[in-house]
Length: 353
Ligand code: SF4
Image (cartoon, protein in one colour):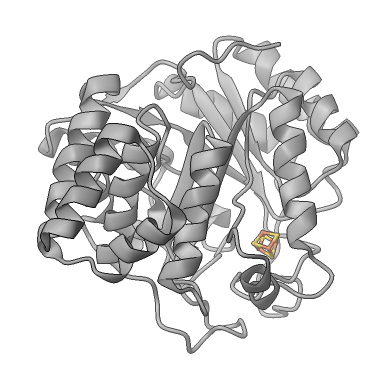
């Protein structure tokens, strides 16, 4: 690490920001020594806000049906080999009931853009979930919808919404998505979610095809300005039935580096150590927490459908029961001196409007 890199890192820790050119420089010139300094500063920043608590969110994967055709995604519309399923409202509520018994107080309802889930259907599910578990937060991750739809879902009781921006560079966005999808609409959705009052999560894949340090710097600058409550980043992992099947996966090293940078930009954010990180390395999630992340998202979906929600190849945690998933993560976190928090874990300073 040069003196220049050290001074950039120390300034980032102090001021919580760098210029876009400086982010690109930091990424392009990174080395293990810089990564270690970043991880130490990021861990200290995480502990200063959250102590040793790691928040846990129960993930329920509602549907593997999607109208979209994102080039990197295993459940894209054109993957004729993907096995499709859709959970019923009863199945979703029963996953949440089981999760509640296991101590989860946040449920993340995630799925492809499956048009079965109209506002009426999804609002009904959110309301029913909130009625059964009023002390729980509901996070939705159901893709691009209209401003009115986001409003209706918020009014039904949804608290948070995850919508990865995928890339803050519009030309890069166009290389990852078919022409029918637009960067402008993705940004419109994020702005609408923010205006509606949600705790909003954005994020991107690390090592996606055509990504450069300059594009990553743009992502970091976007996140610095948008100030999301949550930010999900994980390595790109190719899926065998997509156009990107032969592309190399993103690395553990760069993902951890960026998690640390993100923690320094957003000390109060909820940053997941993702399943994708656990897929590319057996201790990926623990290393993610040690690099600055503070959320894990065990799977509560019925075991029978988990393999069908295959966004990328070799996804882990598809064979275990929910209780096993939670127990496994509890032990993994204890091994690095952390504990799973049982409260909702809202973003600091957020109140429902
Ligand atoms: S990334 Fe999301 S929107 Fe795109 S194809 Fe996959 S499930 Fe559908």
